[in-house]
Image (cartoon, rainbow, N blue to C red; front, side, top):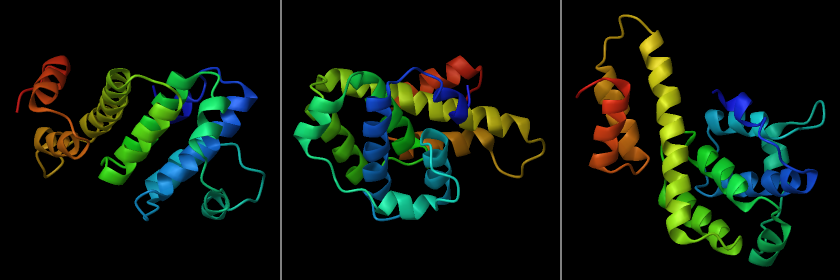
Length: 172
């Protein structure tokens, strides 16, 4: 599944509008808008023709917890989308994680469920990276080591990394 395919999950117009604002807030959380985050934002969000994505990002105001909680029709789906985008630049910083958890609390998602959704998002991003890496023949760097570094940046535990490698049929 690619990033543009994940948007095919059914969301209402209300949830799409809320998701747009949540994603904008997440992307701006660490003060750095990476090209990858911008590309992911464009995959998730429908922009009017000719709109500049970064200007659109910066035009949103932060949501209150009440707006988040009252606006979400499918809170877990929104949380998962946000978690995928937060992991999309292949690192999950403390600002992004804190914001994700704030979103989860506002949408009344149990902390353990938030963690499970974050793991799903992290695994999705790692799987995408693995598929991409394995398609490139003759890379001068160690693919397994590179993916392990990404997994650690995303906050994966050593157990999760070992499990991911077992699922890929690879070993470190």
